[in-house]
Length: 119
Image (cartoon, rainbow, N blue to C red):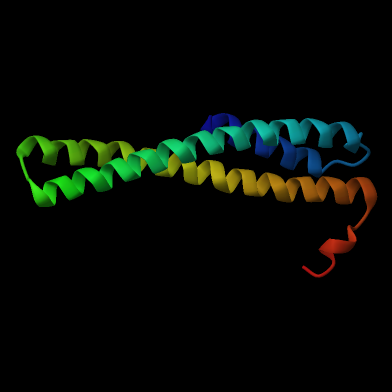
């Protein structure tokens, strides 16, 4: 998913450098892709939070009733949690960039949006 989202965002960046495109069609497709990535982001948020809560519970178990097995479980969950956090971070940041791309597309289609003038 990481390759796909990065590739798609770069593709849209290239489209934004062009002139004379059918921005209505590009915007429609972009909104569909953004919704796919938002769904992926939500799923990864749920998984990441679940693993983080599990890690807190296991660390609490380590503090109250330590055993080598519980310690290994805490380390294993932490090893899994780090890549989940990294992946969610990438998804979150890329979707935020896609929101800005959408604003740029609307600007190219309609001219400067009034609500953006204050930025």
